[in-house]
Image 1 (cartoon, one colour):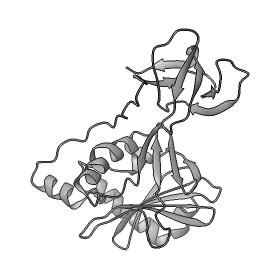
Image 2 (cartoon, rainbow, N blue to C red; image 1 turned 90 degrees about the vertical axis):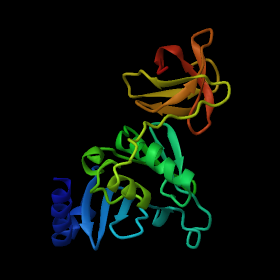
Image 3 (cartoon, helix red, strand yellow; image 1 turned 60 degrees about the horizontal axis):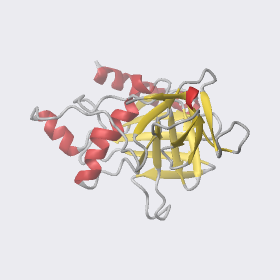
Image 4 (tube, rainbow, N blue to C red; image 1 turned 30 degrees about the vertical axis):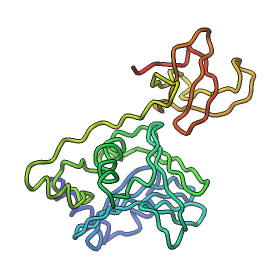
Length: 247
């Protein structure tokens, strides 16, 4: 069924190329010239494209376009120097996640990054000092799981494992707790976001903001203001009424 959908999407893409390029605020997919492509843009000149070629080898890649520049994962060392593109998914950072050139890199793509992407509520992409937030609307409907044999984003080893029925189901990504921060948390705020302050009061400087569903780190403390740390390493204070511990 998914293969039929991919073929149908490919025909639409080839017959009406402007449909995909003009789409905003929602993920779309299409098959073109042997490659399955998944695309989203924010309507402000920022776009993200995931490309999965169907031939051998199968190096999936991602390209973010922002401020008229293209950034890539795996990182393009010739055009962009050593600039690395990072995905921040629900507060968890994945650096150059489409780099599958080593065993550890491939395991990160298979067992951490892709499962997290399929479940994403908040998605940011960072490169060269630019950070763009992309919608996750339609993402789950378009991107296939890595245990789907018709998924063209499979690496060679994943495809071989599926053919021999030895593929291990993907595991949910879980961030490593930084030293001193023993609890993973999310916010509980009707406004959909909470500010992190430099001091233990609501009038001090805002050092960062956390959005609904984004994970951050903290620990059990006395008082109404707890010290917290974002996935990007920013540290400050948040009122306890806005903190919901996950473990």
